Length: 330
Picture 1 (cartoon, rainbow, N blue to C red):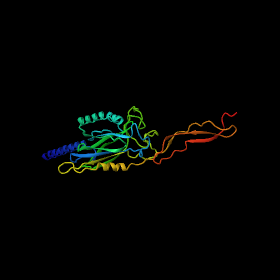
Picture 2: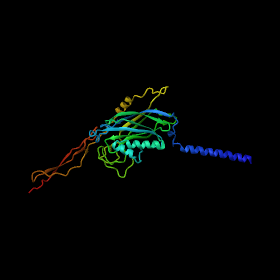
Picture 3: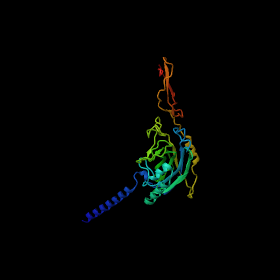
Picture 4: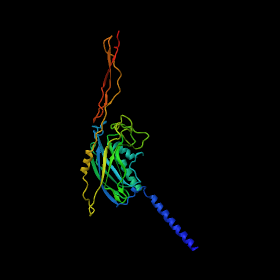
């Protein structure tokens, strides 16, 4: 009887231990990459470089009022409990205001609220705006082993509600911090404004749509500023490079990456996108002109909607003539 009770007690202890372990593991983030066991804090430099040039994106490229440029960069380091923005999900009011107008106040309040309520945000970082489509800006950020994810947004200026950014990039890899991460960036539509072009007037999307990536064929409308149907994909419009800052034995900053070199490397890789000529439909035929009793001629015209660029298909003839019998002959 004593042996039976001993066996029962042992099984109970093992079962309790198993339930405890299973309960603990179910609370951990899914996937090995999201479990960070590296040293608590790591500091990084983040370099954002715009590649929005007229050569790479010739269609409707903004040259004035305002010219092509980038807003300030606003980002956070956080845990998997928080998302600043996410593809195929609805943008928050803060992301909407930032994407449409570059106003950061509401988004900052949302970040602060998430940090206070569920302690999912470790730190906020920002970098100055860039006054042209190409150029760079940089700042530093601090990541924590429990907040190893990085997200940020930068508004495309001018645009209806377009932006670039990163959603939940993990800087930790198991038991160590990554030394460097580079991500090519492509445009996103916040889903809150229905404008097709960089300079479209405000036209609220009702009901609100989800955040979607803008591609060379989507939205599939010829008026769209990023519509290049002959391309397989858009060239990157920006790039972000995140580099871990080294520390010496005293814990002070050591030799740091050459941020200027990183920026120059990015600028040198700007591509040229061919832009084909776009023309209007033909006008109606004009009056038939000529001498009565003889063959006359009539013409029709069309005009250039978009001039070709970067060795794109040139414009065809804009006038066409054909034979006819003169009108109003007696």
